[in-house]
Image (spheres, rainbow, N blue to C red):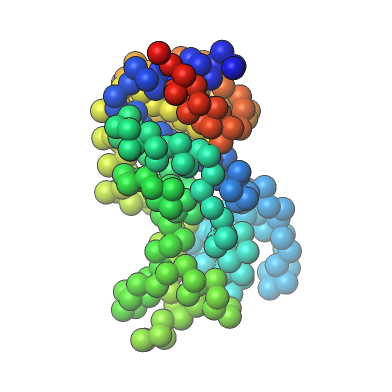
Length: 249
């Protein structure tokens, strides 16, 4: 077994207050691509190519709701996605009393589907949707099954996904919970993120514990600060790590 996998297993075994901070790479094994990998698409209305970041901005949502929801439904909602080995391992580690919290940049809800209970969703969730007028709650199905822009059954206003769009701020209660969890952690495992999206990426600066682990397919700007760096698929790493944990004396 890989030496670094055994080292990760030992770090987890010796820790009591682990926080996992994950990005888009955590869900790729579940068939959910990083939306930034989507090519810019041509908007007939604007007669211009738009980046994914522009398409999920607050401005675009307000001024071009039809094109916003078209992109949102096809690139951000994956109703058939299932938790992968990373999600399942994290839920198991929480059950074992090792992981205290999961902090995620993802909006797919797969951590909760796997069984994780304390999850801080920095960018919201596709599973929470609200009428912008009366506040009525709707599940993800209401949005992705709607023809065009989804509207409230009660008052007829637009239903907005509870996701943080570009130009919108993070939920302060969620952010505070994530920060406090990281401050209290003895080990911080960062996986599936290149640590380039702020303010979420800045959360690493709050960590004061003993072990910082970075697991990502490519290098990150924080590699030099880590006690252990593994450049590999996070789902594969966590699956092998759980096997290594079982083999520890």
